[in-house]
Length: 237
Image 1 (cartoon, one colour):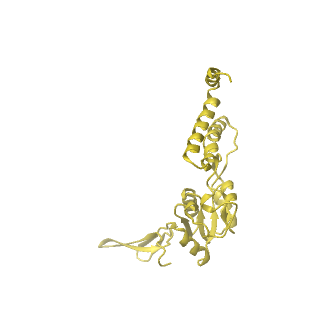
Image 2: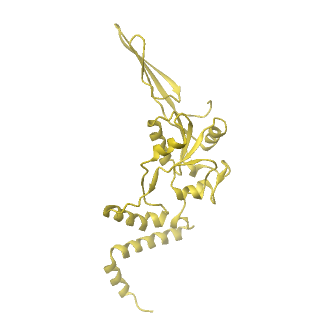
Image 3: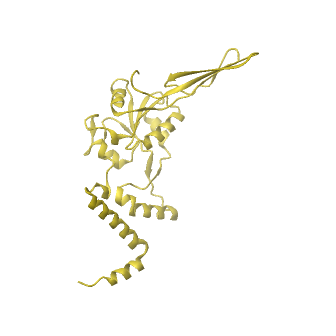
């Protein structure tokens, strides 16, 4: 597609003869890894790269080129706002394991990141690729989206390695999408779907207060004896 600014890939050709080996490198769009042999001991190697586009280019991919949208965010962000008629397969799922190490990590997470940022405690989805393939054929054109662009990049890489032939991502994720760009479902705008927890309280004073409350909660949780001594020093009303 002209004018989209898509990333390109390299096409490398090598030819062996009595005079030595000659290498030719060409630029090509949307190539995939297709090892093969040419007559006369020539070899052909194609390497694919995921396309990175902005929101307007992504909209064109969907409307004009027929790309399917795959949302890889967690269920909470997805329910707040998502592109209409998209597929949803989270790259990470909630970690409900109950081994001692996981319980400690989950407690720490819920008392800080979970409380302050509203983030669930998760682990990689072991069924991610299989779940995607059950809904979207590998030969399909797929636009992978997440909130910040990190999970979609990781998901696109996994899908490309699993045989998907045409994968694209939105640079910086849905947080960079202006309202009205896509038809959406949910109570929030796409760019605000990642906002939760104490950070949603407006104002610097509220942010500082939230940080103090989190620190106080952690102190009381992990140092109850010391906290009780401090409370005893507070004058009675």
